[in-house]
Every structure is written in structure tokens, then in C-alpha cells.
Image (cartoon, rainbow, N blue to C red; front, side, top):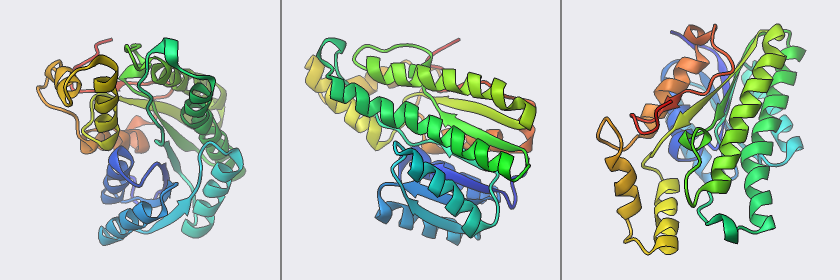
Length: 259
């Protein structure tokens, strides 16, 4: 399974799962375009990628803005000399009971998690077709894209939407040799889950750490997920061994949600 020499763009690459994905793909031979709103963080990740012997560029972009996503894809091709895979990883969470969510909060998370993914699909597919080549589109869904969770209702809705976009895009783009799949992590020990736990504590009165521990205790494999666990699966999706797979959104959660 080799992605040696492939050019991959990863959004939300400055930290957490995105950083883990970027480093794993670099170790597996890819050159990486790192996209994030935080310039300083992606510059640090770029140095880590280069230390692995691969090329890396950084692009500051807001994925909720369609023009910026298209510009990022064009820049990746221009600077790295090709374009083979996009990982639409960037996203935000929201922890709040459904009866209290505001219009502005709903609009913000859908602009980033859903529209941002759609712009990535559009930009990558357009580039693959322009280059008259096959390509791979990989989207970030979640266990919350398979099951709606209390106090994560709007976040869950966005991740269900990502699954829908993944399936529809896979059907529309298959004739062009473009595959579209998603990955669905569970409880990953990142800053996002620190924030979720904090907000759960505020909403329910549970002690800090209690919600995180509760979810981790339900994982069959007995431990929280790491970014590397997710990245290993994304590397499979980016490589040739997944060429006959499209429209799928497998759970990679250590055995927490079963479907």
C-alpha cells in the first residue's frame, strides 16, 4: 500500500487528528499541503513533515469560504506539482441542548462542517477532472454521524450530513474515477474532546473529566482513541488498497458504536 509521491491536501492540519493524518501520510510517502486558520501551528507541522523527508507547504484558509478552498487546492497543485487526494478533516464541535441552540450557532457549525466539506469535494473534483485523472476525496464524519448523541445534536446533524454528501458525491463522481469515502472516529484524546467534556460538565453538572471517562469506559478495546489510530485508516483510504471502495463511512472507534 503506497502513496509514495502523491500530493495530499489536509484541512485542519494544525493540530489533533489533522496533524496526525498529515504526519502519517508523510511517513507513507506523500507530500502534504497543510491547510488551517492557524498559520503558526501548520508551520510547525510543516517542519515535522519535512523532517520525515517529504515536501510540505502551508496555506492559511477558512474552509467555510468556497473561494478560499478552491484557492488552496490550486496552490497545492502549483507548489507541489500535482494533486491526488484531499482530506476534508477540519471541523468544529458544539455541545448544547437542542432547545437552547441559536440560529447563529447552527449556521456557524453547518458552514464549517457541512459547507466546508462540500467546498472541498467541489474543489478537489474540479481539479481531478481538469487534470483528467482519478483522485480520492476523504471526509471527516464521526460516530455522531451514525448515532445522534444527547447535547451533541447539532454536531451530530452535521456529521450525518457529511455521510450524505459522501454517498451522493461517490455516486456522481464514480464515472470519473474519483472515489469519495469518510472516516468516523470516536472518542479521540484531543483538544476537541477536552472542550466537549468541559461543556458537558457545564450542561449536566458532572465533574470535569467524568463525561470523557464515561464514554471511554464504553469502548470495547478499553482505551481512548489516538490521532494515529484515525490516521492509519485515512492512509488506507488514501492508498491504492481502497481503490474499489466508495461512498462508505466506516466507524473507526475501538468498538463504541456498532452498526
